[in-house]
Image (cartoon, rainbow, N blue to C red):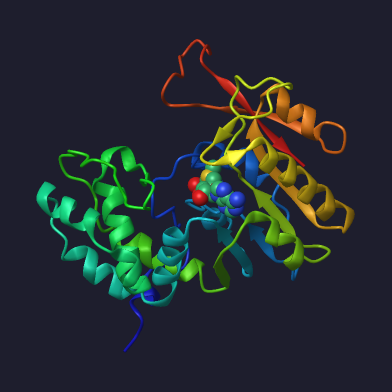
Length: 277
Ligand SMILES: C[S@@+](CC[C@H](N)C(=O)[O-])C[C@H]1O[C@@H](n2cnc3c(N)ncnc32)[C@H](O)[C@@H]1O
């Protein structure tokens, strides 16, 4: 049987298969200008999230990691058996009671394919596409009440599966990239951001469980990679603390982030983000 992925036009563009906080689609053109991959180089994305940069750039060889185990198993399910994921998603109705049953399922005991369908279903039908869990790792986002959400975008899932063929996908802390990246490789870091309200003296701030100590650890990882001849690109906010961490050893470029929430036509509400390289 011919794999269904072969029926897609070869230039069909893959997009992230989930909505993800910090998704990079709006900043893609600015980011892509700085993504230069030499022949044979491996692309690493240690905070892959929705993977907007990866799916757009589609490097032949990649290492994708994230600390969210269910997200990583979702990537694996899509890579290994996208038709299985599509079949499950097509059988799931858009219905609040069904959503609540799905939400309560003991999903970690199931296959990567089942997790992928579960993850995508909840992401598409849950409130604002949020991913949030309680202290027992139980998913607790309320039903989203959308009129007609796209639960299964089969063509895009097939394109994602195809893009993932040359990717190794693992649940890891970001620092593990140090042991893998080789001279000439490229690493794009998109960590949880330091909030704009953080000043250079503010040291105990934590976002998504990512503390200031983690931000310092990340800066040190970036420095170690630079020292070894690995190309590094990082995204972060333009908070003073970010300059404090990076300005001495890296170039900080401001890019315009058009935040859909408070972007005004007169330019007020536009907040620059930083690309650090
Ligand atoms: C800002 S999001 C990445 C957004 C992504 N680039 C996109 O386009 O959707 C940050 C990601 O970092 C992950 N993360 C948080 N702490 C981590 C850690 N210590 N190591 C690896 N990943 C981590 C989160 O699970 C989340 O997926």
